[in-house]
Image (spheres, rainbow over the protein chains, first blue to last red):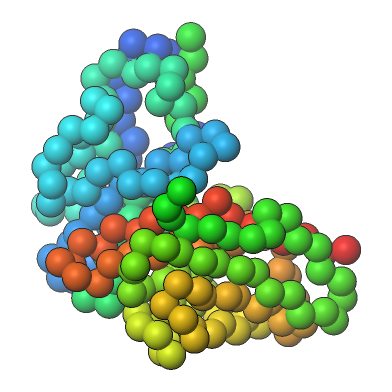
Length: 109
Length: 114
């Protein structure tokens, strides 16, 4: 079954500490994975996609096919990183996404 | 201001009543989506449409209906058959060219039952 799992509902770290938001997936084909973010009172928006191999706002995510993971990392957390983060998997070629349940990240001052 | 507009922001439904949530986009996207967001459950797909006059059921379509008469518009009707309609509803759109799979979201409609 196609599935995205974010095991942590809530993650709280201090400012300046490293952050890792976990995402595991189950998919039989070649996966296309995304991280979306929703800041307080803002719309859900794309943070990054694995095929772009880019760093956005200091965040990176590496696809590990062996561990079927796509964890989101940032070496030094900032208060403005506090938000809800969703991992998503593209389901085939029909432009649908399968979503994880989300992780609420709180950065403490 | 380009993007996706959802209205109303808040909506209340009485027992046995159908209500319609509006979603309009000016991004010239072919594909549009409706999601339901409940606490701790992420986004669940209700319906999606890849082209005008065509749409498909998502994972939780029961009790909902949609139409896609115009490229810009994808309204969602929550019917009286939906027994637990209280939720936050998100509309999204995406291009179908280039295989980008990037979805753009509206601000959402919060539906409550009176």
